[in-house]
Image 1 (cartoon, helix red, strand yellow):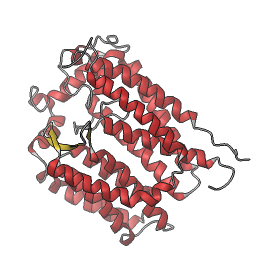
Image 2 (image 1 turned 90 degrees about the horizontal axis):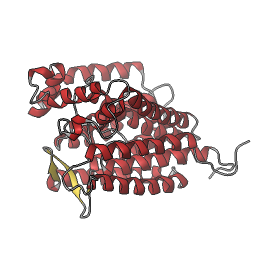
Image 3 (image 1 turned 120 degrees about the horizontal axis):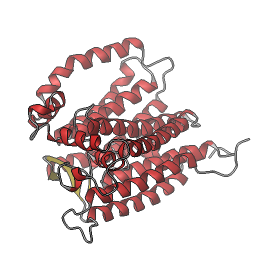
Length: 369
């Protein structure tokens, strides 16, 4: 018998809050002594703490709101997101060689983070309303492909190769999850293999050097290969149990670039070692398992598609970031969910967790809402 009272999914909440606790400890270490720090505590740490607070409130709010409301808002939010990305390209704040941030006065917002979420919404809505049994042929997939390509091209123009790749992977995965006919899949595969070499010619110079550095980082150890090599050193020096909390030399002596964003996992691996890294990976594994579990048992197709997409987006960023940090993937500027510094990312991910909780809660409602 179904429960008449909604219950929160503590199998999802517990690893989330444990991961947030580890994240704050790790960020405190990574930003300790940065410019503007008072008594060793960086302003970035305080900002992240505030964002986690705002994100937690948003998570519980959206957990108790009916997730099906997003279906009505999906195309409006998608259109707003595209507009924000266009404004960012024209008037956005430039940092690290990319024009990705839109200043909103008291804080800067990254519309590309919203793009991942809004894309999931429109794809989930589309496949819910245009469901095809036994796999999609090519024609019904033209519109979803356009939904993917518009933010992909615009984000690539900023330029933000990492987020553009995530957008493409999320979109392709959701389409495959919805199901395609074998002939359609083979056609996509041939097209992808054909255009891959063309993509090289449209990449920025520094993007090409990053990919080449992945093949042989020692060719330019003080230039294009520097990030990857320093990250490897940090991860390797942690060994089994780490060098100790607040004792990591790679970040504290400024050898490790972007230690609070792209390479936050390297800071963790150096100070807490293989054991500490394994704990964080296990927490992500619990989150991913529960997310896919919610997707499998959601009460409607929209919930199934949305829960799958949200969980997959967390997995993709988690996998690519750790792959970057350990040197098994090229450095493409992907942050680690819930761990890396960034208000836009934290807020969007916490809202998405709230939606997962909402899907879970409404599965156990006694009456149809």
